[in-house]
Length: 258
Image (cartoon, rainbow, N blue to C red; front, side):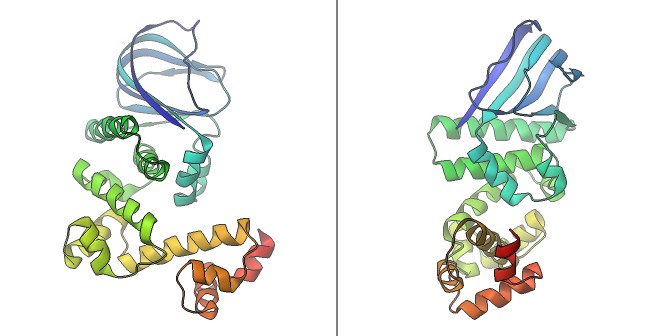
């Protein structure tokens, strides 16, 4: 479902880059030359991140001293789309696009990639890798402005929090629980979440619950009572009122229009 390799060497455009999975990213550390597609040729600049659509043959021409070639499945990509619902995110892989990271941002991206490689080798579970990939794409595409100022250690803490949230958001609501999982005091956790997400824990929990509710409403025929129970609401009325307050339409109306 995901493959990450370091590539280097001299490349000629008569040979295409192979990828195990359909969605591809090339992150350039040091290179000179071109990335070649039918749509045109693009300079291989240090710190440039290419987001490559499913269709299209990729060829390189020039010398690559160090770069990362990442490919992954649509299943892993779906977690990124669930967390990033804006137009820019949805269009990221519609056609070839790229972002240029400054030297500090690029170093952070390279550190994340090396850690991701270790996680892949360690055969971490799919949900964890999906969270890691979503964090990496959000950072390298500069979609989350608040992430850009975080250190590598803080980015790893973001990943840890997301993993804990993903596992327990349906059943745990207390700040103390998540603070314990993060190895922080409640006060330090709240301060960190404000810095990393510009939100507090209740807001993050609520947003995750509503996102899950949307998925259940669209992809299942569960009753409102059943969805409320799955998401840990004590009563169906509490769920439906919370959903309408968040989305502006009732859960029933949301299901009909989606």
